[in-house]
Amino acid sequence: MNQTISPSSLQAEAVVVGGGPAGLMAAEQLARAGVAVHLFDAMPTVGRKFLLAGKGGLNLTHSEPFGAFAERYGPRQRWLQPLLQDFGAAELRAWALELGIETFVGTSGRVFPSDMKAAPLLRAWLQRLRALGVRFHMRHRWLGWDGQGGLRFQSPSGPVVVAASTVVLALGGASWARLGSDGAWVPLLAECGAPLAPLRPANCGFDVPAADAGETRREFLQEIMGRPPAPPVGWTRHFAERFAGQPFKSVAIAFNGRDGRAFCRRGEFVATATGVEGSLVYAVSALLRDEIEAHGSATFTVDLLPDHSPERVLAEVRHPRGSRSLSSHLKGRLGLDGIKMGLLHEQLGKDRLNDPQALAQAIKAVPVTVVAARPLDEAISTAGGVAFEGLDTHLMLQARPGVFCAGEMLDWEAPTGGYLLTACMATGVRAGQGAARWAGAVMAGSDPAA
Image (cartoon, rainbow, N blue to C red):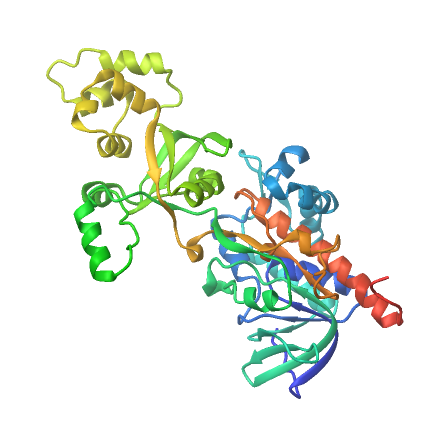
């Protein structure tokens, strides 16, 4: 796949920077339009995050009705919906089938390749791109523009400058930097006047406040450090040692934010040594993150027995237990044990555990407070990036004509479940088609901005 550039400069009809799904899709649109495309990526191979996503079964998209699908993009729906109407779940499945990859709808409504793998799809896709004439240049890190508008790259053989009138940037967000998305493009676009929203973690885990962090210790740390330290986080040592890594199964999370947004859904999540993560937490992560940023903490409740009514739970808790311990009683009457019982012990004091009314209420809504999102590099995806207000309908930067942006570097976010990949593909299609029109006008000698 690697190509060697010699000498240290190149004139190209179109350049795509970034070899993730959005960049590959933009390159495909350009090549199909007859434009000679050179794709550059800092990593040794393309599609690294795409392949990682496929390790547990590649979730391509989701089969739910379009209206519900589009709503998953929250405040960015009005910008993304037209793109998804052009290339949404149905188009993505048809595209995969053209590559010889059949798909199926799982019980959750999520769509997967029949073999659940990412590698065969990526191989077929790269074969198509090579057949269309796309040239790949790996280990080329983009460094911005030179004084004449050329694209600067650092390559294994030294600096490279590429002149191109048409450019698609698909550089990803800033999660999983080791796979290529490190957010290093942010200052480069800020310098050219592109409007940017700060990059923030999305679909991420959270830390709970430390159960044994005393005020005296915090004051001592502040005195010796000269500034307030980051607040200590984590469950009690007993809970962390016993339950970190274990899932909460068949539960429901409810959250009501002070901004009026609410969430309630059943599913699973996992306890970590310092807090929580997992699919159900990821689904509410945007609301929790925003609440923490605005108010310093966020509290959600966990229904440990969503199939049981509050009345039944109270009746079973009040049932005489004789000589049995409380743990044995709750396990026998309600099936509560393990990590669920551990959470009750973690969150309730002795007095509340022995108060049937308070205990029953907690079983149906035990509060969990979180105080910090996990670091951006640990997140599944990224919020923030290039604002849609700074782009035209073809995703071209108004501050830099001829430069288009696609994928996760745009300011949008979505939950897991196929929504992330679908929108990356849709933005790649839109940017690639816009770039093809721009390149065609340049080659024809007409004004591409007309």
